[in-house]
Length: 211
Image 1: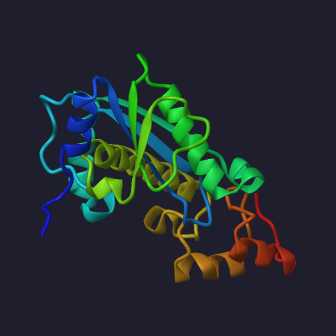
Image 2: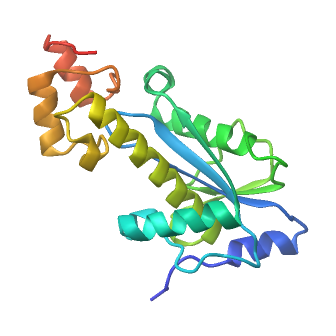
């Protein structure tokens, strides 16, 4: 059984002459509320934090520890696409937009990208490879998944303080039973994705709105 992500994708790119290889991942496609967040990370091949893995496989404490090391030892960029953008252009395109923004904010720019998933965002012109389940296969993508999740989770905890009752501090906007019941009882906030069916259905039923 494979232990976790490794450097094989990065080393292959280096063998082809690329020097600044960024792992890119996003978090937050599935929630009913909040932004979608992406990160781009250029690791120092000589100083890679031990224990990098798909952020979903790590405890919150492990993510926080690794997140600090990633920020200290690597080049990191984090970006978002807003709820309005998600509703306007759909969640897939919005997640790609967040990735494009994260890559664009790296300075100096990377010369090669390892993208989690099976698609390369159309706005990226840098040579890139899409890696299915990349956060469990590439240390650079795993690092991006960790810092993106930490950032988005903090965003949802902050929003939970402004809009109590939806459980965002624990469900991070995902459609848990608590969140779904709160939608029915408290209504739809400005941070809910109106293009997502459970939210759309409540609006269509004429439930009350709260800002």
